[in-house]
Length: 113
Image (cartoon, rainbow, N blue to C red):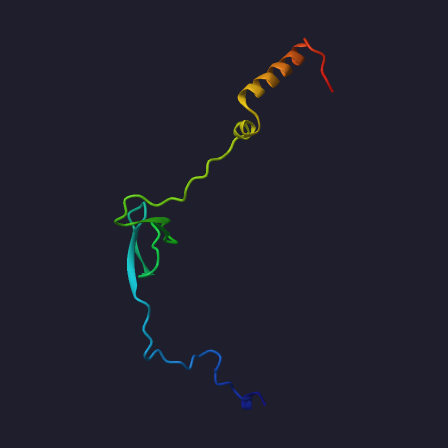
C-alpha cells in the first residue's frame, strides 16, 4: 500500500511565476572597511539613505569608504542627580538648606520633624 501511495506535485515548494519582464530596482554598491582592514560591499537602492557604518557580521562594524566621519546619533546628555536638583531649586536655596542641615548635625539647632 505504501508503495502505491500518491505523491504530491510539490505545488507549495515551487513558484510558478517567471522572472520574465521583471526589472529589479536600480542599485548601488557601497563599500565598507572594518578596523582590521577587511573591505566588503553591500547593495543599496539608489533611493535609500546609506548609513556611514554597517555590521559585516564577521569582522565587526565597518565604516563607509569615502566618508570622513561616521554620522553618529546625537549623544543625549546624561542628567546627574545634581542636574535634576538644580532644575528644582536655585543654588541659593540649596545653600540655605545645606547650612540648616549642617547646623542640625553639629547640634546647634534642634531637629524639626
